[in-house]
Length: 230
Image (cartoon, rainbow, N blue to C red; front, side, top):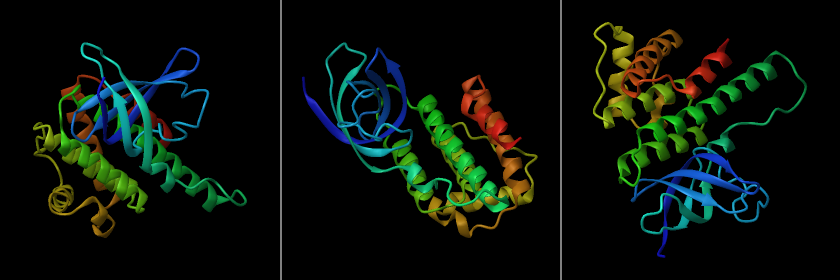
């Protein structure tokens, strides 16, 4: 069995038996893979916190012909959006409550980004552009870019890369101006793009409708985000 090493984004994990996990990850050069991480539930020595959604890392895995699951040897993380989410500290008050709520929304978006990539990425179909988009979103989160404009940027580029983006003729001038900026800036520059909350809400509704139409379902993580905002 050949041992492959490559950069990858961790997307999600599932419990397997008493001690193992199935890990879904997007590689830079060989598409989406599903692998078994032996003893990942019982021992943190080999994987630690490296299996959290949207963790960027170096993975090593073995693959056999005609086997759906690869054998995940190790994950060496080098960036995680969870590092940008602050644990609650100090006394509870209005400011602390607002900060905690913002961190909860950021955490909810981590799952949202991972689920979107998992839905669109094809098994064993190389898609370096999608990988680079996901990795850049992680970098932007770690750099402190505001999560709501970052989410609209991610949705817009994901839909464009998949060739299914259809501009809504009813979008406001402000929404169109944000999309024009999104076409020309990196995600790191979104903090300098002026955009109102109502404009982001408008784009969110348009993007979610387009995503649901092409996936033919509503994402679980999108429902979770709606519940968080109530």
